[in-house]
Amino acid sequence: MTDLRRSFAVSWDYRCPFARNAHEHVMVGLDAGAPWDVRFVAFSLGQVHVAEGETDVWDRPQDDSGLLALQAGVVVRDAFPERFIAAHDALFALRHDHGGHLRDEAAVRGALDGAGVDPDAVLAEIAGGEPLQTVRHDHEWAVKEHGVFGVPTFIHRDRAAFVRLMDRPAGDRDRAVAAVEGVLDLLSNDVNLNEFKHTSIPR
Image 1 (spheres, one colour):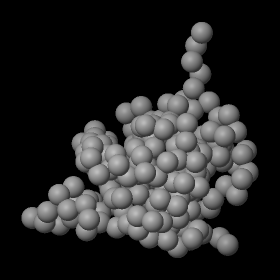
Image 2 (cartoon, one colour):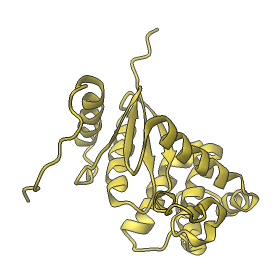
Image 3 (tube, one colour):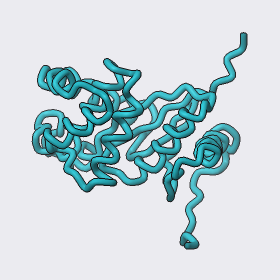
């Protein structure tokens, strides 16, 4: 039987509002039954902004405002995949809906608990150090293989594009699916289009 799903990856850092918009479209689309096989790729905006000669964030994670939540996300993604979408949404909401701090362990615990994930289990994994290496691996893979420089970046086959969706889907499943499919169509079909940026957004 032919697998008709579209496979793609999309990068995230919980600090970015545009990552939140794009990932919510993806999550709502998946909930609607969209035929997608999605790889969620952790990406550190803190590491992107490390100047030449400075110490990588991997060697000083306590200094970075986003790494605790990002590690929590990869733990849930890899160890509790059935709860990932709920936790992913909750960690984005912590920052962008509730104005919480992603480095605040109590706040991250609360988001995980609200998503049905045992925060003690997640924080124990983080304390062991492996999730930080997973984030680093995801980040470095995206940079090396696809030239990723920010979030959200959609990766489809051998092509990647940094994408800004201006609005959240507001629960509209058809809108969410159409938005993501539109991105994938551009990645798949138009080899000549490198940049298409509105100079202003009508409101």
